[in-house]
Amino acid sequence: MKFIHIVLCLSFFSSISLQAQVTEIIEDVKNTTSNVVEEIEDFVEDYQFKRKIPKKYDNRLEAYYTYDYLDPDNLYDAWKSETIGYYRTVNKEFNYHLIGTLHQRYDNGFLFEAGFTRIWHRKIFSDAAFSMGSDVDYLQMLRFDFNTYYKFLQHENLIASLGIAWINYHDVHEDTILRAGLAYYYKRWIIEYVYFQNRSNPGKVDTSTNQVSVGYGQEFKHWTYFIYSRGKQGYLATYLDIPQEVNSKSYEITLKHRHWFGKNYGPFLHIIYTNLDQVYEKYNLSLGLFWQF
Image (cartoon, rainbow, N blue to C red; front, top):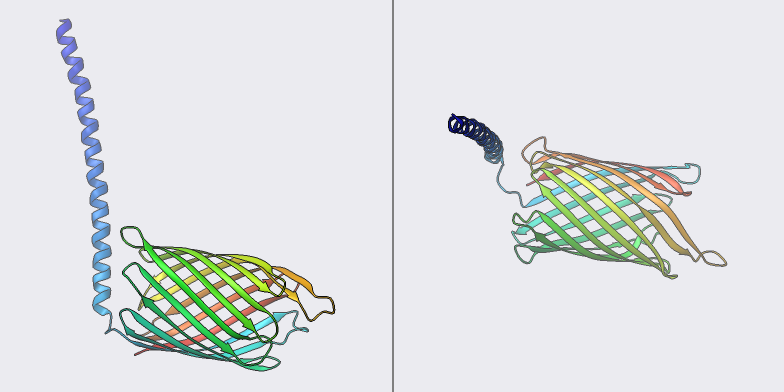
């Protein structure tokens, strides 16, 4: 009789264990099926979208108008500018751009920029830009930027970057900016962090800025970016009889949106709020159109 009880108990516990294993297997199958269905849906959506993608466009034109309102407005007039840019894809490894901007403030000024992007290797690429401005105090005389990017992970969707920028102004000032960043791409999302370290001369005034951005979208559909940066802006005020270091806290909030209304054209919008502590608040609005051909 004891033997029968033991056998029955073992059978009971074995049944419970087997039932638990079956339940676990069923849950695994459900999760796997759900993941497979999700992947299939993403594949179908991407496939249907790619079928609608027009031929590859090697050229893009952009034109936009920018208006800046500064507070206090009794100290600063509104800033306005008109910009036109041309972007050219030469081949899979190289593209370049040319941009011209006419600024309208208390003195009118013109800024020209030329730049390129070069893919050196499947995992490595760089971009560079050179700009020069007319002889007004709010534009740089010369500026040069260079950044290099490296792709990590199996899907190459984690990108680290290092860069340097040099700015020479029309007075005695110049800035050297070091840049380090990390961007993660996941499906239609882009999350990026960038650190900037700036040295202003004369005076060796060091300041830094942290920037975080989140982007969402897809090419030929739409792109939306939210960007937040916070740090300091500093320089040596050489126009004073006794030069003094100026170092102001600042933060900036940016919202960007680009939308394809047709296969190769659409509008874009930039809204930027800048707060330079004890100096001014700036409200920036840019409206533009782009055309790919």
